[in-house]
Amino acid sequence: MRKQKAQPAIAVSDARGVRTLHVGGEAIQSAMRLDDPHALALDYTRCMMAFLLAHPEPREALMIGLGGASLPKFFHRHLRQTRVRVVELDERVLAAARTHFALPADDERLSVEIGDGAQALAPECCDLLVIDAYHDEVHVPALASAEFYDAAFLALREPGALVVNFMDDDPKFDQYLQRLERAFGGAVLAMPALYDPNILAFAFRGVPPAIDWATLRRRAERLEARYGLPFTRYVSKLRGMNRCTAAALLIHGA
Image (cartoon, rainbow, N blue to C red; front, side):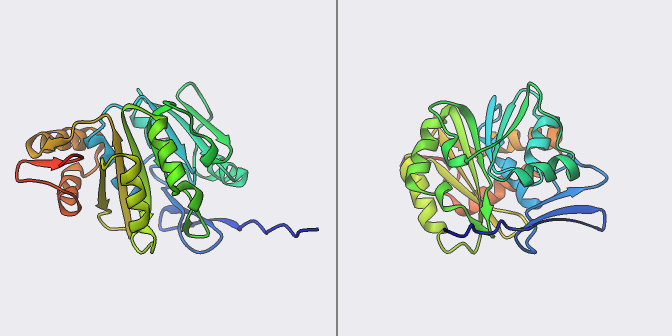
């Protein structure tokens, strides 16, 4: 009889006005400000919102990986035109999010289900796909395979965006990025987080091949005023890691 692998321990702790979620170790999987539960407490989650610079009006979001529900809560509070479906593998994580991280009950704009995110995709099921799923501090391999990224491309309606969170010291990051670029025909941008040791990758389907800097700056100013996040700094960060000219950020094409 095969011995079942023990599930990683889940712990919740409070310090200096912030509640944190830990799964299988000391690394912080999610954080919540106790005085503002719907705010994005971690820098990398705020930086994930940079997709709005290229895809400003998502309608149907699929998120794989719940954690402390930072992004679902932010969407539910601030992106009221977006319906969010979350798929989480571990029912204990969902219970922790409900009990300790102010995850609201399911309604017409938010649903959370237990399941395998790798099996959650269907053709044109969403126009925004968000991947933030780790196991024992390692990016889940099944959610970074060439087959998964191919399915992710097909899952997006046009225009659509995929957002993936990586650690900046992941030895397979370059390999994952190349897989993304093959699946999305090169329409991929990458951006380091402002402060956290993360790199965010953004892949697009059905968006223009380039966005001029003036348009990006105007969008950033509007988004910053609306959401209170530093979108103007995200524009500068995007310039550093991606193909561009003096006039425009190149998303795909020559």
